[in-house]
Image (tube, rainbow, N blue to C red; front, side, top):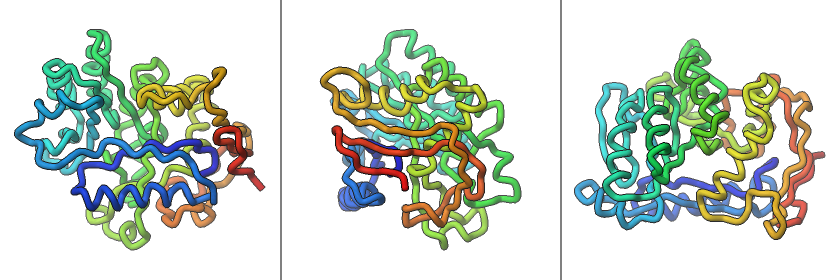
Length: 303
């Protein structure tokens, strides 16, 4: 896992059998580097909530909204506790916050990727609502121009945004408006990616690339290490009510030793994941995990 101590995995709005399959896959992820990491699946709820969405949200301890682009025509749909909006995520501002106001539910926006969605998030926090938000490593470090000639390894969901949007979400992480950074590890087989752009599957692997990719933001001066630590470890643990993810007396000794300056050239065929779909293949990066400890036990050591 190359520096990952615990994995919080959103399973999505699938039928029960698919959720069980997702749980099996979650534990397979932990076996990538022959050690057992903490697997923390969350966000799975029964289907068919459309008519009873508000009533169901009122009984949830934490509502999770995964803002994803299912189409480019501006249509919106509500499925389970996932609230799916238009490509610019503008609908998230009023619709989600209105539900929070009506129910008082704890709320986490899975991915914020546009500047347009930030004012509503800021307003909700200032009004005292228990609201948090996340963003992926890809939307922090790549933009729509990286897709170039419709390169499918750069096809993710939501799609990559403009450079203005990218800079806005980086600044939101820096200020603390966006609380969490996630890998949004989405393996896809080679055949699913080697298709015309419109037909190709969305997603990119992110577990093994997360640290060196985010070191781009550190070396560019956009984000310092304490800010990255807060968004990658402390805030996710606090949001899920866990005692890990912090350096305090009595907390689990989950630690990562890494060299932020170590240069690497990423070779996707050397990734331990069965899927190799990364947009960073061949990229010159900096940052290498040297050793990982879970509960004080060394579970990974770089060779």
